Amino acid sequence: LDEHEFETIQIDQHGPLAVLSVSRPKALNALSAETFGEISEAIDLIMDNAEIGALIVTGAGDKAFVAGADITELAALDGVYAGREASLAGQDVMHQLSSLPIPVIAAINGYALGGGLELALACDIRVASSGARLGLPEVTLGLLPGYGGTQRLSRLIGVGRALDLMLTARQVSAEEALQLGLVNYVADNALSKAREIAETMLRHGPIALSLVKEAVRRGMDTSLEGGLEIEADLFGMAMSTEDFKEGTAAFLGKRRPEFKGE
Ligand code: HXC
Image (cartoon, rainbow, N blue to C red):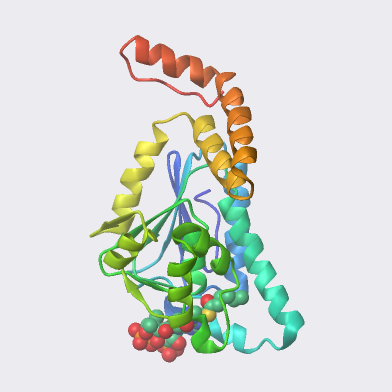
């Protein structure tokens, strides 16, 4: 993974942990079409690499996570068709990210605005640095969030809070984001905190982690009854794994489990 060269992102592997940094220093890491293509390619590489058990998404430098979609590129688009296509293309990559079977943590190290916040929302959990600023300023440009923000933000923090952020376009601090439930943690250094959290997750059974994600994600789109059925089915799958045998044997043997993901 380390050997792969990209123009607008960087991807590093540290054992089972991959770190994807969006890196467009001249545009506060704004997402261009090229960046979306590269993120998509990187996600494919991660999917194909069985060694990787967790992913952190962050922004290069110390000023921005991602300051949104690239406004220069957006300004060059025109009309219903182009807008719809741009939205769908971005949504696809966000969906690809949120569908990864491994834990994905956003380390929000600065501005996470517009499409940048939507990128963070497509991750499983979010860690913000103390100085981070988060918001959905699309209405200031005569737009609305188009990479899943109207849907994912409302599901995450509730309709009332989501509408407030989208209709006022205001930026919130890391502390307020924590109160809103928009981020899970605030730390001096978002990336180190994210690594620490990833290490905790990596100690657990990888199949169990992927089944938790699947149960929660699929359950969000259905009734409670349907969701409970999904949970029971996945629970049955978990019980048929070697990891389940290892986890319970380790507990009873008073030792640390060694999960193989089988
Ligand atoms: C392109 C951007 C950019 C962006 C910043 N830059 N954000 N370029 N797209 N989203 C560029 C600036 O033009 C500037 O380039 C350089 O990065 C530094 O930014 P400054 O504005 O000079 O920095 P500062 O004054 O510190 O202000 C930081 C900021 C501001 C508050 C984050 O840059 C800002 O408001 N950016 C736009 C945020 C935004 O509206 N995002 C939502 C986009 S819409 P130069 O060349 O002048 O140095 C969106 C829609 C998604 O995301 C859905 C689409 C379907």
